[in-house]
Image 1 (cartoon, rainbow, N blue to C red):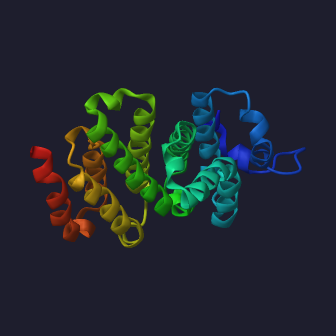
Image 2: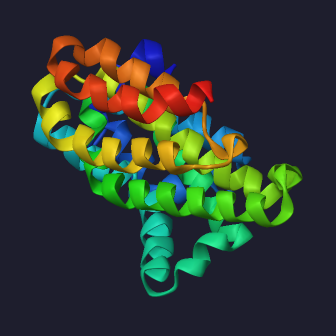
Image 3: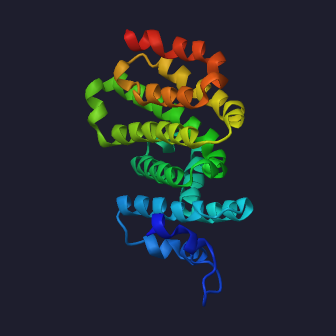
Length: 243
């Protein structure tokens, strides 16, 4: 329905006081409260397709802000706690919530395409910091307990956070429409966080193969715009991957 009828949801129909998307967004908590996690992610993707039909940029950005309000509140709360005590990022419930929020963002990005940038910009640097902390936690756990620790639910969820962050970045870059903006604002902190982490990770099992697919997606999309960064990417991923 969202794919076929999206325009109808963002325009005021006969007998309506406002577009139906406004009603959906104002009652979103009661809509999703009884849904399973996977259903919530599907719902967010569907609503994202509706919002993508809004052609007025200002109106669309306001819709996206309302749309991401609930996941952003939980995200902000955990990030705020982590700024005072980073060990919250070892708490199983907090880690599980962050993983789920990033999955929600991946689905939102898939539906919205380039306009998702307003949400990505909001969480981007915090997400990269969380990525680095998860890497440190995983490497520490493996060095203390061996590779078998990667089968534990907590470590699995930490890895999901890393994978979903990479999936989100690759997904948005591949849908973006402004290569210069991507290159100037999003690539430098990404390369610093992700490539350095990949290169430094002494335990091969703690490295995420998604780093390679993320870099491939970025290079494919940006083409000649990112040529100057390719040696840096190779330095970080080539030799240590072969080793």
